Amino acid sequence: MQQIQVTLRPTERADLEFLFQFQLDEEAGYLAAFMPENHTDKEAYVEKYTRFLNDPTIHMQTILVDEIIAGSISKFEREGDAEITYWIDRRFWGKGVATTALMNFLILENTRPIFGRVAFDNLGSQRVLERCGFVKIGTDKGFANARQTEIEEFIYKLT
View 1 (cartoon, helix red, strand yellow):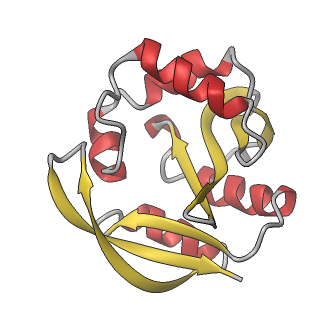
View 2: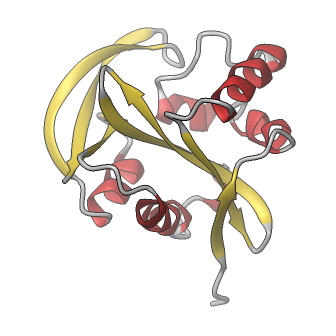
């Protein structure tokens, strides 16, 4: 099997065009569950993430696989806690891209503790967090726009 090269670089405004397309994937959206209500509105997406690029509390990186944009990973703050979020294009699922990207990101982003939240049934993302040293510390419930219902989410922490 051919080895793939996973790298990170700071997200640029031009990346937003690619990253927006990934969130239109309905299967991926269902698994992610917690998405913006207007996730199909490209103008709103670009405006929001352009703001994020200029926010010093948000650390955004673009994930590249063999120099192809494969997703994004970010640290943001929620109620004073650092959290991570990532999105991988479905074409790259099951290839270790998310795990490698998160491991690389955690070298660049040294804020600890850092939390991750994942839908109760998103087993792939749970495994990614666990492989990177995150420990499940609790649960919460939230409205999942992609599913139009409240669901349980697991809370993970890396110290």
